[in-house]
Length: 596
Image (cartoon, rainbow, N blue to C red):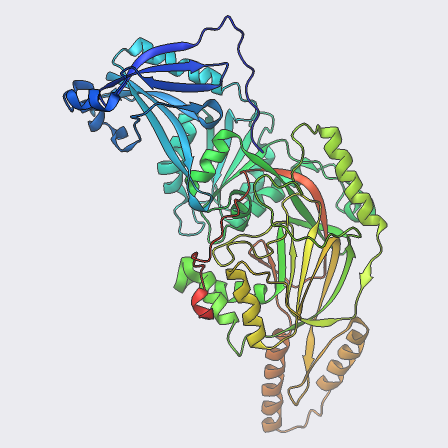
């Protein structure tokens, strides 16, 4: 969602009009409040000829080339830049090393904006205007800053939490060299903290934070860090709700008052990429500074009738195994651990199916039209003029419709992977998303079930993630649009002949009795028989551990519990504009070498 424009000044406020130089050519530069632009026009009828007849490097342009802004863009033709695309302006000084910032000889002003690149990236761009008069430059910079301060959605105070150990452990360097300069140029006040851990320290920081003081909470890290910050924020906003009430009554969660900005620096950054479209920290920082945001749905997860946690995406089966092996290879592969876990989970000996019982409440008016969630999406875009009461009413409507529909219950089946998605989950492996038709804020989840199939067919399913084809349009894959879902994993027992069978709830008592009976053997058995029995038990125990996978919850491992998921509409505001439909077959995702 784009920030609204500031109020237009009254007619008594005159436009600024002065002469600046660009590449030795004089330009008439005009600041127009009525048009919300800064425009420039060459004073010469033939600026190129006029510029070539002059000396190539004047005194001020020579110093401009020696400044740090020499690599930034300058202008040679007429044009304009809109206020909504600016995030700052500052005076350029020529100073020696012993002078502090802001001191030295005035050279001109720089208007800071951006330009769009391919792949949803934004590139910093500066319009440099030369003029040695410090008073004139100061007047222009102050006027531009006053106008930009009038945009109501742009944050004035930022609370920044950095996880320095995420991903390649480059969080602090990324913040100091890339993110902080952009925030300072946007005249934002920064309250920075380094996270010692994502446990009690993070919880204490969120609990002690004055939510009314800050306009945006910036998280520097990956999916795991973002998930823990969101959980701490939601727990704080809904501290008056009993955990058991989330299941027993139709409770609408209280959304946090602050927007959330994500600077992606983790091993996995599915949350940031789904909202921003890229893992570029410059793009994320510019979106935060400009106040761009999107409403995003969130899932509450319940276990044994109590609130377990808040999540975006969850998977059980193959995706859980990827995390298991990735953790084993953490010390060896480091930032490449996910690739190593992916390859290991695909091997012939490790790829397997798991028994689960799936129950869900399907959306009755489910449309057959499949559209990806892109920038300006009309399916999930919450109207800009919708007030809090209107949003609350929409959330209540979604919640009532979910509780009114009947549960669809199927028998326990074998699945290769079970996925519950509230966001598309864009990543380097799946450029269009792990669930490419999931929307950010349509009040629904996508339940994808990959049934038991051959390894070659499962590889075909994975290959479709790397292309523009529908990965769910396969005979062994089913997908539903739901608002509530229950997943119950079933363990399996292995007999003496190596055959496995699922342990259903009604069989648990029988299993316990059989275990007790096997333990009460003849005490006079020989040592050889005891040794053989011990080896069989070890093999059986090892086989039983393979019968359960783990939950992959926002790319963080969780135990194989029976969980219930419930979606909540437009709970969060996350900085970003969404993605552009810019996928090309030339893009080469990670793991593409597996399918060639």
